[in-house]
Length: 382
Ligand SMILES: NC(=O)c1ccc[n+]([C@@H]2O[C@H](COP(=O)([O-])OP(=O)(O)OC[C@H]3O[C@@H](n4cnc5c(N)ncnc54)[C@H](O)[C@@H]3O)[C@@H](O)[C@H]2O)c1
Ligand SMILES: [Fe+2]
Image (tube, rainbow, N blue to C red; front, side):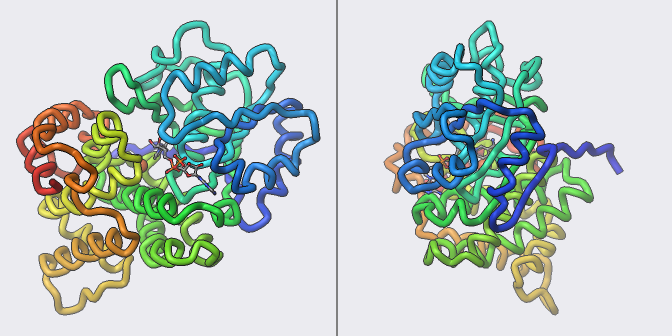
């Protein structure tokens, strides 16, 4: 058995009404003047008010300028706005975009150099103020991971800051925060959560702990996602998604994600597809290639999603899992081809070269992929 570490937010608070615990957590962490990092969609849907109702009026600063898939410059202007305001803690309220921004802001408040200097692994040297994450999508799992992903328009790439200083002190995961999530975001971030669990389960760095989390996440997300998509007010489905995405975040935050994410990154960086959409469009094609290397794991996945496994060969079961993955993407109406997103076929060789450089993720993948393999996968998704 290889050595495995397990990292997470320090405290996880889950369940309906969990937002009520925010007041006590602020006292415990000594936060008197927090910055609340969020976006306009969450503000307009009422999600922000659910949180600020638990804050002392006049004691907090709101930064709601975070766009989806934020760029470095957005973080820089938030940090400028917050400096000199005696901010002593950060509360993220939103999807992955707001949480990742809040993470980057929290480690940049005392930073002298540019935020770009933090891209890569372990470049952050400190975080001086506490961080609380409250997700409103289900979701990226960012509330429990050590990564913040930002767009770098100069290089047309999405880049990660990876550091243990990004792990929040507290993650409050309450399904009611996700009820207002629009159907298209429910679909994209929900498939992202499923990909986190699948890639963590197939990762070469999977451990007994991440396996347990990933399989449970798959069994929760697979049946719940189409229901949450079809009826956003279905609280049972929203609860299963909130828990499933949290478990998937814990799994991939430690086992890592693989080639689906590596091939999705250039689609976001160059063609501005959302993170969830780019993962969803690559998912069936990468899984097809990976399946040849780990059929036993596909049998476990089949059991987790309730497929028939008795008297069937591993090959037949694997084929059923691949069909089921394609089906769930259809159920939540995610387009199946790159062509649909107006990505030109001529871009494929460049995309393949860029994806092959995402070695941080490709090294977790159960199959080693050459640039030619990657190009072939993009072509099959075209
Ligand atoms: N750090 C990590 O571990 C990690 C993992 C996966 C993805 N990500 C990053 O997360 C980002 C994507 O995050 P996301 O999929 O959660 O979407 P998002 O945060 O980009 O939000 C998408 C849209 O949904 C709206 N929205 C979110 N919650 C809502 C709610 N409850 N009600 C109404 N509107 C709501 C937002 O206003 C926004 O317009 C990407 O930048 C991706 O790279 C990070
Ligand atoms: Fe993801």
